Length: 439
Image (cartoon, one colour):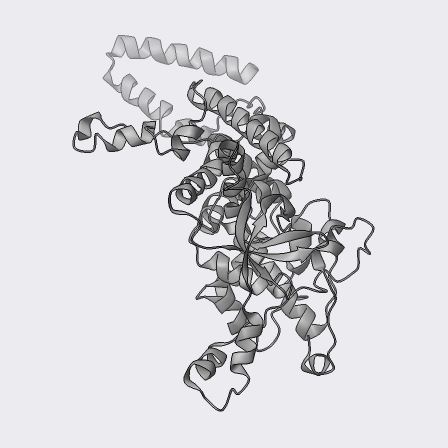
C-alpha cells in the first residue's frame, strides 16, 4: 500500500483467503487484497520503546497493537492456509483428505495414510509390518531405537532402513507429536480469522500433531482438542510466514520458490500496483506462483531487493534467479520435488535440463528410485522407454581401410614364402583379380 493511501486510511480489502476460497470470485481479482504485507515493529521501534527514545514516541503503542493474546482454540475450528509455502501434507497423500478438520475426517485421513505406508513398506522393502505409530508416540522401542543400543558394537549395526516418501512425510509430524506429548507445545501457532473459522498463518505441522494426538490419545481426554494459538488481528502476513519458515533449515526448493513468489507479488502489488489472478483461478497450484516467473515483466521493485533478500534468508541475489527458474519447472517435476523434499542443489545438478522433456524424464526416474508410487507416474512411462535402435548398415570398406593392414600383411607373408609357394600364391591372386575385374 502506498504511503498516501495509508494516510487516507484506505485498506486493500478484508480477507484474502475467504476470497480465494470462493470459486465464484473474479479470476482477475487481486489475490493480495486484505493480505497483511507485514508492518511488524522494526528494530528501531523496539529500540525506541525499550530505551525511551524520543524519536519513537508511539513505539510502545505500536508494539502493543501488534501483540496478540494466546488462546487455546479448538483444533476443529482451524484450517490450513492454501498459500503457505511449506506443505506439511504432500500431494502424494493429500488427495486422501476431504479438507475437513473435524475429528472423524482427520481420523479417516490418518488411517488411510497409515494404510498407504504399510503398502509402501511392502512394495519397497518387502516389510509387511505396520508403521509403529504408538511406539513412536509413547517413546517405546522401535527398530531405529534398537540400533542406538548397539552403538558400541559397530559391526552389528546395519545402515538405517530408508523410508518411502509417504512414511518420510509422516515422520516429522509423528516426532513433533511425541515431543509435544512429552514436553508440551513450546511455540504456539498463529491464526487469523476466516469467516467462522480460523486459518493457520504459521504452525501447520504443530496443528497436525495435535490432530494426531487427539485422534490416538483423545478418547475420554480433551487435552488435545484445543491448541495454544496467537490470534493475529491484521490478517495473514506473508512476511511473518517467511520469518517463521526461514528460521528452519528444512525448507525445500519448492517451498522456497513459493515463498519468493509470494513476497515478490506482495511487493509488486504495493509498489507497482500490479494485479495477479487469485489462487483458485489455477488448475494446478504452481500456476499461481508462476505468475512472476518472468523477471523482465516482474522484476524486484527498485530499492526493495535488500528487503526481499533478508526476508528469504539468503545472501546472494543469484539465488533469487535460481528460485525464479524453479517457477518455470514442468508441473510434475514441481510436485515430485515438493513431495520428495528435493533441495535446490539437487534439482540443479540432477534434474533440470535445457530440454523440458529431459527434465521430466530425469525427475520421474529420480522419483521412482526414491520409492515414489509408480501408479501416479503412469502417464510418463513412455518417456522412460529406451528407444529401439535402427539396424545398422554394414560399413563399406575403402582401399585406404586395407592398404595399411590387409595388403601390407599380405605383402610381408608373400615375402616369407619359398619360390614355389610364392609362384602358386601369385597365380591364385592373379586369378582372383581377373574374377573381380570381370564382376
